[in-house]
Length: 497
Image (cartoon, rainbow, N blue to C red; front, top):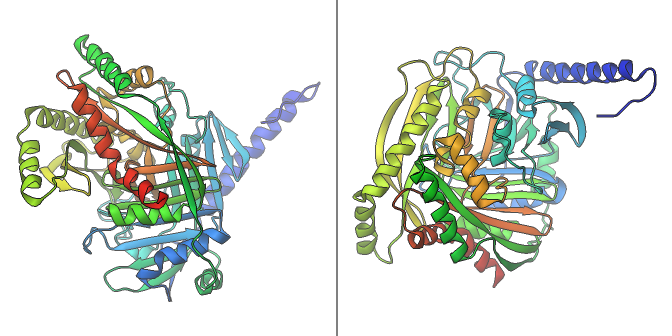
């Protein structure tokens, strides 16, 4: 915000503040004027051309989004979303909300974003069945895929819990979102693609990008710079966390570290390697100019679909076996480990309480408890939790109720985050935050950015953490972190050959 001096400074300051409020109201009016259902047209893109097309899009649009849900084709992994050339981008740092790099307003950025994009009404169970997300990023494409696409850093919790005051990351904003009104949806089941749009018809623009045949894969260079903590450092961190537990300040908290890289060249090769090594329900590539997030997340943070709230915490981890017999034995070991079971139950209770903050009384339910989920390098315990959205709540308050996830912070959540900040002494940025979409239809879906690579300019990082409880062994906690990093580390090795 500009600083005014002189006899008219107060009047000029008030004028600017009123102007910004008018701009926010104008943006909200633009959102409310959108049709709930966009125009849909067939598009020639084939599923096997996804990476080629997205690479072409990246060469034209510095802000571009790719969301995929991989694994065996089912309702849980059916659709792919691609878009670029956003109408607007919104970025939050400190108490500023910027639009396209220019100050829009000051205050609580998350509340300001909610003021602009909150739906005209919260979606209910009897509302139009226009949900886009379900069990994956995309489920029903009849409403298209329009909305805000982007990420929230772990430190965005400062906007949701103003008294917390975590130190923000120096390289990544608290959140960044792209306002997308058109794009491409690919249906893996039918093999067909469609172009959707709410406002201007830019079919020809996307078609021209698809027809380009001269976009080639460029080289990538990655140099490992080291870990933020040595094994001995980590052992001391675990002991500090256990002392906090002995003092009664927390029951469990997530402690970890990062691996840093110097990176040059394009990111798509790294994404393609990760995609092949660790196909996951929540694959994402988000480019915001010189900042890129790419990942293969296994874990849903929060979803709101037609009034139904959902969260699928993953808590309890063991490595994959070298063969089928060892894999089964390790799975049995995980399912019968008292420490892992107790930790899982504690975090499920935390997630139930989180959803209960925005759910109708008595509607929060648990289903599919202690399900075993297998991924390329680790196995997890998972439980599904659901509820019905309470009147007066919406997708923004819903996400805030569960942010950040208890599986990346601890229990109790607020005090655990204070302990984490003190022990790690290193802001997390996107790690442990959220990646996904706020939809024009009032539905949303966000995964947790883990198993991910974050890039800012020529600096890249991988991060992971493990849950420390009263009887944790530092050696096993350290190995668990390396196991969680394993898929991304292997992808880095693949493209570095």
